[in-house]
Image (cartoon, rainbow, N blue to C red; front, side):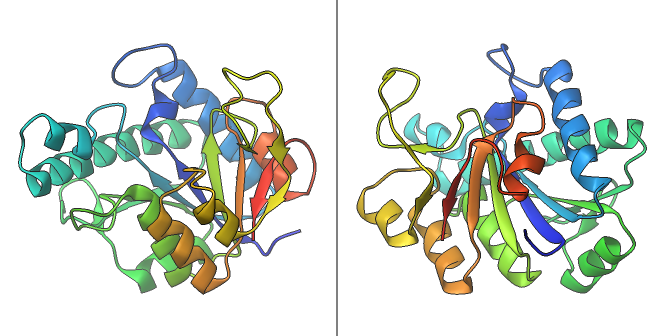
Length: 234
């Protein structure tokens, strides 16, 4: 259904599992096994991982930490998550590289577009950490930015619900899923599936966004093939 280069946006909260903080290794391993299924279908896979399970910049700012400092702390949390995901994937014999927007040469490569493309062409999963490297920008925006730079055919927002709903599906049993919805509708209805900057950038680059449930087996591979439960923004 889509060209072979895709970007998966994975929130830090997805790694929490039932924990209140940090990384649930069983959840991490499940997510890695789902990514391996896509990898075996010969997709070139980019991953952007958030850091909200460890530290959320905007929350730190609300508690009195300088916003720029708080956002940089959040970026460091994404690097911790990226390294854990790398370890889990490589345990499953999926070759990976971590590239960071903040230079940390001892543990990861700096983000270099040409190098990232080369890794993808050599069948390595590339995990991008550190957001955009700038405060005041979310990892959602980093996902749209990297997908645009690397000419990805689709962004997959891997989340804890089956797609975009008109109401919170956790608290409303009659919530209705949007199978298809436009970028403009998402912004105008303030649906908050991703932030406005990321939606606008995806629209400008004409990259569709699939939203599906990362905790259901085969949900991503099914969504890529137009099957199962998901929403698409285009």
